[in-house]
Structure formats: structure tokens, C-alpha cells
Image (cartoon, rainbow, N blue to C red; front, side, top):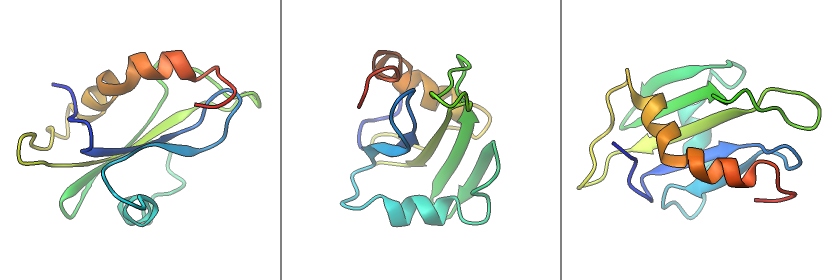
Length: 114
């Protein structure tokens, strides 16, 4: 299973660029949705939870990549169901999210900007 484009917010950092949204989930402004999904768990290194009708997932980079300050990079996802794509099961949500973006991230994480 791969996440349907437009069904998720993806926020992360790269080696040389700071935290930013690489996917907006179809929202004009993904920040309020992101903040609501991660409310109360913003400092946790890993997150797997359902908030209303979305999943909030955070996990460390599976390849162990770090930014220029040698901080482990994490990936944050807010996933919503769409008419053609249900929410993934929580037990596999992080794997599904990563499989949806891993090739793209491998190409951009070391760039000056995504």
C-alpha cells in the first residue's frame, strides 16, 4: 500500500534545510491541521496515534540520516482517509508512509533545498 497523493501532510528536515512541509495534504495551510494532530506530543521522538479522523505518525529516519548539526532527522505525517484510500492500519502506518516517500527523500535530503 502506498499513500494516495494529497491524502497526507509530510514534514521533515534535510541535511542542509530546516523543518518544512513537503506535502500539504490538500490543505491551503497545513499548519493548523499538523499542530492539532501533534498537540500534546510535540516533543516526543515517536508518535503513533489517531486524532479525530486522521493518523499522526512520527518516526526517526529509517536510514539514520542526520542534519548538518548531527541531529537525527524525523519524519512527521498526518494521514487522512480519502474516498479511494482508507487509513492504513496503525500497526503498519509508519511503514506505509515511509514507502510512499523514501525514494523522493533519498533524492532531496542532501540538497540545499527540497
